[in-house]
Length: 448
Image 1 (spheres, one colour):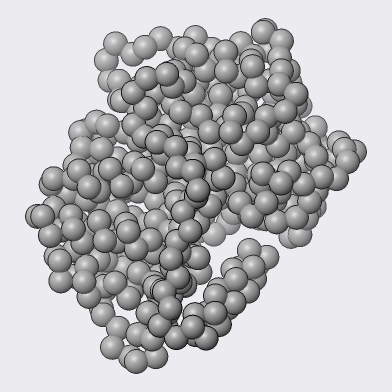
Image 2: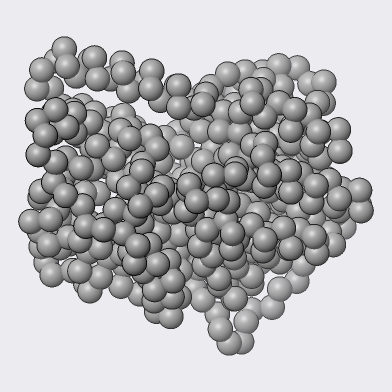
């Protein structure tokens, strides 16, 4: 509710501004510095160099956002499993945590009380009691750490779990919760939410996607995707977790023996290797490889573009989809029929006529389709990044890019196809009030 209230206030102010300005259109204020970050062809972090990077960050006095803006080289994954809905991925995540022997590292935008939150609390607490290294990083607002989730986080701290949080909206303790540290506010993080979602177990198994540990992802309200991977790419994700954890003041032992547990030897697979790239958007640094990848995938698509995304509001991205359909690419977009919040959906709805005229298929899922999936020909992007200005340029985001025909087809069939199977074609709004509202949201879409 806290996040929704903030959004309502922000949008209300934007609406008032635009209404007063008449026909003025809000333009996106792009970051002053954009650092080309995709694709990385040389000099990026590899699975082999990830442990050295982690060791450097573990011993650093201060880790800045620039240190977390890591360019990762294409690596490989095996046993890639796209899992649709909390009823599929939560049991797998909990089972992997239960089997953990050395470490559990969890990064989550939204972790809140409830049935599924309690199951994770019990699982994490049991691992700590068994001597496993457990670390948790969350977004202070997304997880409502000082609001509705206060008791939950107190229980996690009492269990001995070190927890750090991104403080985008207000100052709080510097370093782990409950540490007695001074209150501070890293000015680098002001105004930016950490929207990433990732779980790493024993440095061997990782999950990346768009879920929160919240009950609405485990019942029939929100539908999301987490992709489970193994293989060398997990070492890069582990290094990324350590970078972000250190940025928020979390301590990581820099003894070689301890760090070695986070980076077990993983041989390059002889068969079944899926070329995989870790992409992380870091606000305020000019490092936006996910945004660049989305642009490249859409612009270079020749046969198909399949999208599931709850917030398609970025006008340049919509323009590229229209252009792709115009050159003969089969474009299919699945959006939620019950979007939360509604503002980005209204901005997208304003663009229905030109998208449909170009030949784009737009389908509305009956509930909140919250997944963030893009398939373009034989490449697939899965993670937490929305197609709106906040995700593309203002928030921390994490996606995985798979460049493999079989994986792309599987995601198209098992994820996009399953969403599309229960969705229905959208209709162009005819009501004057709805059309006026949609146009207004479209004009302020750079703020959404």
